Length: 467
Image 1 (tube, helix red, strand yellow):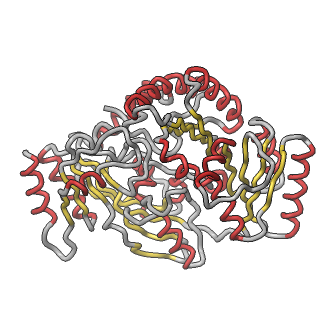
Image 2 (cartoon, rainbow, N blue to C red):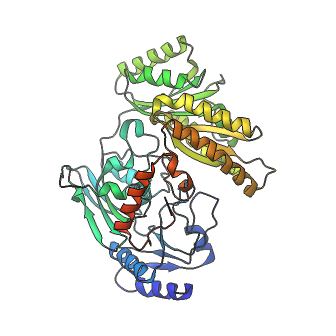
């Protein structure tokens, strides 16, 4: 089919009914919906479709199979692996208009949502009903539930609450064949063979599209308190973590470098937590449910100072101060964005983090001494964000080419530490060439076999994860 024929067919497919979908072809819409936060691949979709129902998504998938038209799912477009980029004339299926909360059960502590529900929308709904949705990240105001599940996003609370998949009671999906599956039916116990939910969670839309999800909720945390510490050395991150975890259940444990803090402070709107400068900083969050917990936290802080691990620190005295301290961590990506950072989202077992990070930092610094390296991440679950900032006098294309050379060295270290080349944002296109550093040849062969079962014609997000 020609692009014109595809567009005409899509419009006919989406018209009619009580909730017609939309088809967009303006250049600005193609640019906006055809990309995510990566800046490597220019978007080139043929059209954007915004369905409103699962049945419309099913019709799109059947049309794609009949006419060999490639489909790319699009949520909040906040990913960093080009998993939602349409760079080769695909049709983008954007879930922005499937953004309704469909049902709520106080007894089951579950809420049924369409895939386009924004993370913050779900968090606010839970709060309005006296409950809590704990999966959280800096992009919560724009990321969508379907995208979160398609990459099994984790974020800042994994140390306490786990990943997105841990909160899924049920899924409705449209497979690559065009079948609608209602998976697990929201049951807490259902031991009837393979749990297909978990194939679609993290599959990046390559097996089918998630259209609805029933999410579990929890009780609201009580008096969340934040402690920011200036660390004497990188290895002290583990010393502090082990010390606090013996007595306090942390809800978050983040870290960032002095260079990362410098960019946040220069960006404005955020104050330094204390006068003392440190090479690294840790941010701890916990529930101060009693005076005893606060006393324990202060005693542990003093112990860390006496041991020479911590140079200085501050603890929040109010919810507002806690939110302000979180800005030191959450504004890092925003503050370095003008420098076109090349990002790597990697992970290892928590105990191996210091040595792992030091090795990578040494390799990058040795080969590219003129590149500024920014480290931050969810160190409490072993997830690190390596950001290499583009020199102002270097062309973007030249910079990305040099960073591709860095990748091989970085991922060789990841492989040696038995880590992951992608901790949060999926494989997409940017991590596809490096999948073998984390997955064995046998594993990849099984992944391909699963893809063939659910999407035999290869129309669902082709070119992502593997070719």
